[in-house]
Length: 244
Image (cartoon, rainbow, N blue to C red; front, side):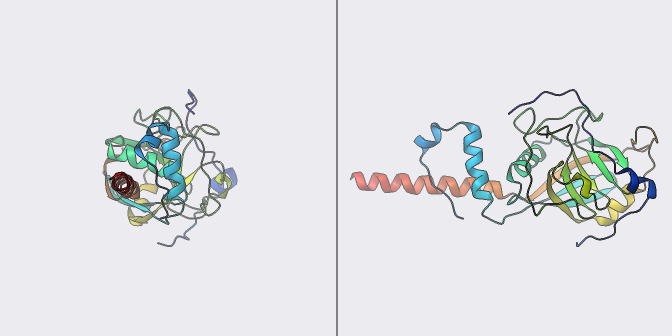
């Protein structure tokens, strides 16, 4: 369901942790249900997507992409089998070039770096289908390490395009912000980003950190769509054979 909000998308800072300056260094780098075109026509777009997400939860499949920044590349793994809706929206936005030339507008050492707002203010952005997405939590996805990829929001069910990558363990964000992936390459780049000086009031980097573009190497939703169409084709062929 679409929600309009003028609130700034933000992530609460763990005050005790931030004041101490501590940083965690612990990080370790189908069954398909067929349905016919006629049945598809009777379903809404949301219903079709939800059927795909239920299938994806059973696949164990991940997506892999590379975020090219002006400070180096970040390689990301997306947990499509545990947060399919969130991952699908993120992948669609990446494929559309939504994040091209978008800055990381907020950085807090020992905590996280936040970006994904095309306005660059922390007030903008929407999910791949417009508006906001509902929350999607999985018991195995926690803010337990450095390099965790999670959604920024301004409250429950207000996920748009903004995301953040952690600089350490942030368990106070569990079941508040939706984890959907992690850094699997480019930790040295993340280390450099954390050291960029910021405006002490706004936490905006003094020197621009820019997402130039994103390269997608593996997208299981593309595979799922191809498999789905093949199942529909074979089912239609079988029906036609039975009619002869």
